[in-house]
Length: 176
Image 1 (cartoon, rainbow, N blue to C red):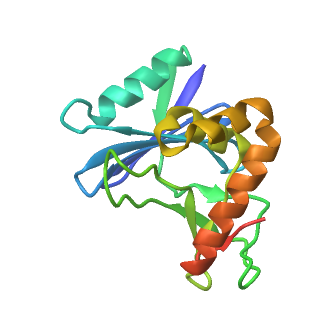
Image 2 (cartoon, rainbow, N blue to C red):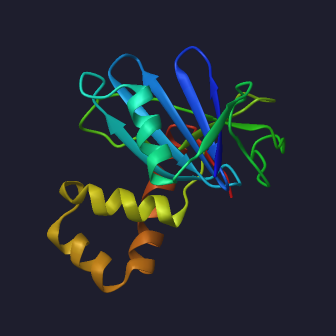
């Protein structure tokens, strides 16, 4: 299997079949690995301590996991969200952005920016939310964890509503 690898100042992009991986340095506080599907939707994000990991090591581990036998360097392009549009202006030029405010304490939310109107946006997949909940049990009460285990779909819908209200107050719009 073949991989395409692209690099810019602080970002590495690896494309393997229908997956896109982005490894980037965030304000010298962390390395962020973001996993995208073929539509540019974020499926997972993992933070790494830059004192313990470097981008090249993460790339090697990704390639091992996919049994890559060859790779080719290519020009770097930003990963865009496909088949979605900006709820503010209707543009479909949505590029993923990354922010981190307090490493080790706050999980990173999948954020995008509209290239046309500069609106800040977010888009959540169920697979991303499931991983967020399962990796961050400490953010939830015991009752919430029990609700999640008993009726995952209802819990995720309620969580989406909380997130939507929070981001609305910050003028970060939801991509549908």
